[in-house]
Amino acid sequence: MALLDTARAWLAEDPDPATAAELSALIGRAEAGDTAASDELADAFDGTLQFGTAGLRGRLGPGSNRMNRIVVARAAAGLAAYLVANGGKAIDERSREERRVVIGYDARRNSDVFARDTARIMSGAGITAMVLPSALPTPVLAFAIRHLGCDAGVMVTASHNPPDDNGYKVYLGDGSQIVPPADTEIAACIAAVGPLASIPQSDDYRTLDGAVLDAYVARAVSRLGDGPREVSAVYTAMHGVGGEVFMRAVAGAGFAEPTKVVAQFAPDGRFPTVNFPNPEEPGAMDLALADARAQGADVIIANDPDADRSAAGIRTAEDYRMLTGDEVGALLGWWIVERGRRAGSPATGVYAQSIVSGTLLERIARDAGLGYAATLTGFKWISKVPDLRFGYEEALGYCCDPEAVKDKDGITASLLMLEMVAALKAEGRGVQDVLDDLARTFGLYATSQLSVRVSDIDLIADAMARLRADPPTSLGGRDVVAMDDLEKGADGLPPTDGLRFTCKDARVIIRPSGTEPKLKCYLQVVVPVTGDIADARATTQSELDAVRASVAEALAL
Image (tube, rainbow, N blue to C red; front, side):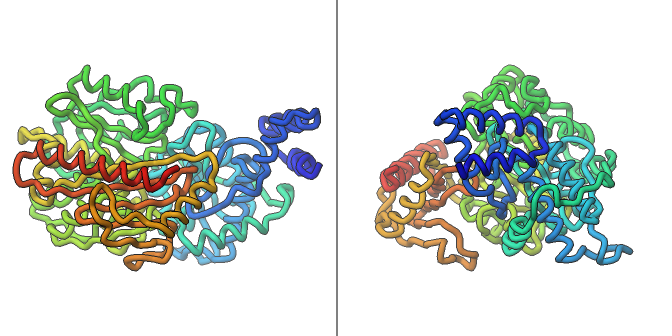
């Protein structure tokens, strides 16, 4: 009865007719003895969807453990209280008492509703609230925070999560995602919010015109040099919001318009052509690969649904293949250095990457005389690196213009990829030629992932505890020479739940996923290239497979 009472109380204040109807039907079925309905209610009200360094992310639906208008309203009210308590960011002629928040949203179900609810609550708290003019990429919101001189930004998106999810990502005035202790302080403010009816709201917020988007596109285009522009590309927006913005940027940069994967170009929160709207998922790039083969394209470019990530595929002697996130990260890092060298303006600053990413970028940075830093997983950490010039994480996230966008930016990264491919094409070379050159110089770095999805979240904690108590002594036939428990801190980084196993010319990092019920394993082997590059690739793949098999055996899930 307590569960039903909780559900009825929630229903009484739910402002959303759709979730109210869904919850009412569930209550009725549960009252009639429907076990499945009771189980669904129990899960929907199993605690509160937790606000953390990734903000909120979860399944849409009624209940405290779902993404809905009540949960979002409480998050917005808590964030507003935090901003009021911590004061505004004094810039230009504004007083320290004036606070500004800009809000963006993608094309998922209810994203626009959540954005405007947030604007009303911010305005009701006395904060100047501005909403982007339409569903736009996450990097546009990250850009807008600094461009408009805001104290915070909110992006309503679940990135490349399944269709029934949505999320709520929070940035502070420096334009980067929140990190501790701000996350726990905001969470405490959210916990202190009273009933929905007690939250002041006002329609005195502003919907922005297209000037911010114009400025973002102009800034992205300005990051390119004056080199060749002849390149043929196939592009997929993965049913997200990146398509029109990317096409504008491509035209502004002087490239021919890529061939669109038409079935995936228009925003559609149902993501009808893919099982998971993530370029890394099996099958997600099939339509783009087919179009590339038909067109004989030089390169394939993909954004994820909120366009903060970028994926690339290249033509090989036999066919096409998608590059790994580590390959793209190394290539973009190399191209920034190489482009500066050609222009007589050497790159400066620091290259950074997440600790789970492949380490070829470090070799490139050191060789170019640049600084280098490894951070915890997530762009909230990468963006904090002082004097950052370029940063990436293996999950297709690249920060190519940290002065303007202190976050992943799939649009600008994709432009840089087109620029690089065009420059190489003009020389009669391809992307694989660069990868081979890097392998000959630094060794062949091969990376891969092993992800284990579980139905019982406790299995993840059990596996981590078992590995800490009884770690493997060898992986893929290589002796483990060091094990670092990242929960105790390592390399000067804050503690995080993870384990790092180091072997000679190999490394494995195992950690729980921060957003899904998965245990994620990041594998790397390095093989010197002393002879034929094809032989080195075969050797590397064999050794990577051996390490993968050892990790799978050690996990035993």
